[in-house]
Image 1 (cartoon, rainbow, N blue to C red):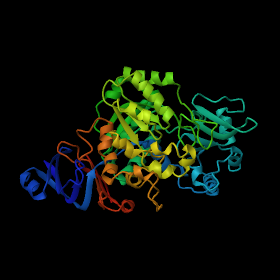
Image 2: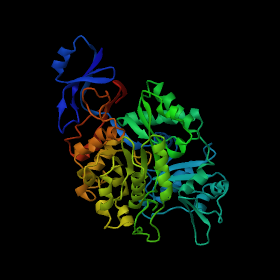
Image 3: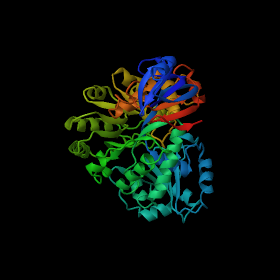
Image 4: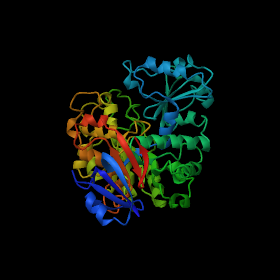
Amino acid sequence: MGTLWHNAIFYTMEKEQETVEAVFVENGEIKALGLYDELEKRYRDDILEKRDLKGGYVYPGFVDSHLHMLGHGEKLLRLDLSEIFSSQAMLEKIQKSVHDDSSWIIGEGWNENNFIDRKIFHREELDTISNDKPMYLSRICRHAALVNTEALHIAGITKETANPSGGVIVKDADGEPTGLLLDEAVELVKKHMPKWDPKQLSNVLRTSIKDLHRVGLTGGHTEDLSYYGNPLKTLRVFEEVIEHSHEHTFRAHLLVHHKALEQLKDDSLNQKRKYVETGAMKFFTDGALGGRTALLSEPYTDDPSTSGVAIHEQSQVNELIKYARERGLNIAAHVIGDAALEMTLNAIEAHPSLHGRDRLIHVQVLRKDLLERMKNLPLILDIQPRFVASDFPWVQERLGMERLPLSFAWKTLLKEGFMCAGGSDAPIEPADPLLGIHAAITRRKPEDGHQGYNPVERLTAFEAVQLFTAGSAFAISAEQTRGKIKEGYLADFTVLSKDILTVDPDEILETNVLYTIIDNKVVYHR
């Protein structure tokens, strides 16, 4: 017995503009699609219920190919600085949080590029807000953080403390720490911060999933296992919340950070679950453009003293990929700068994939020679279209105009034959896939009126939606069962109030999610 979904326009995403009137589902799988009258007649004896979608526009369930589900929940529950647009407003918001009963002041998402003065606070300025309660303020990229003197004291960071491998403790002219920590240096403080216990972590995950349902996401590829203590316990939280709760159904594909992989046995990785699955081994090759820690082959245009930060040396990257192959895994590498991409390609070529596809996450700065090398490898490119809206125009200062033609070059990647998946990197960016789709089409902020940054790299609406449907399925070698509305595919649907494939791109921002449907079940209804 099954369900007949109808009174909607269903975009199959098999071919551009291909639609059907109705879909019949049995046991969570699409059995047939076509005209409503024909399906009703053919399956009359098998239809348990008919579900009216009220004239909505139905797409294969949107899946975010790169986010941090627990991090997204943390952002929703903590001091959120991502919508602050002046340094003074940032100070005022932090001051309001000083008197809560938490032992630390923890904030998420500040971005000095949103401030007219581009101000990055010194620890002494943070001390005027609190000199006895430690403070940790994560930059929007999560590759940098600001801390006050008390947090430095707890972490044992002094004038004499050397930079950790893959990180920088920013110091002033006298050698004193300023309170700004880059990449691996943030771990010196984070390891002393209060940890979420399993009960709290369950609440964080439930909060996250509820919001992801709201924005129309039926699944996400997330990397969370190495940040919250024992990775097996974190995995168990995902199982408890998602597998055992009708309310929090979500298709969670967990990338496994190499540090977590060392603590997880194969039986926990290969365990069969309905909604929670584990995937490739994740590692970071470099940092981010915002903090000038993305690794470039030439110095930053706005700071020629640095070319970025290598999180690992070439030999270490080689060993990481070799280890993944020994565990029978593909890799998912964070690569933003072209030098980081080159290091990663060197290691992949030395230790080729045994099966499936390796994933390159972000790939924001490219070179022609690297593109040619990439064509010879089984790769999926995991891009975040919203970064264009967030990083321009300031990223032009970082990279200079000569590097821009092959930076954030999503259309070029598609033309060169690469399959791309679309994600948000939430909590770095909002998790809303409609914002990512809009950015992929327009290459600008919603409020901007121009033709987009490097407009030749704009995607069509069909290409943009594919990123979050077929692309995300391809990223985990699930393209035969997910990412399309097609017979034999999973019954996951995102139902919208507008036809985002044909409306003016700015109307996408006015579109509502009417229903989020996972495994033939409505998990969100507007």
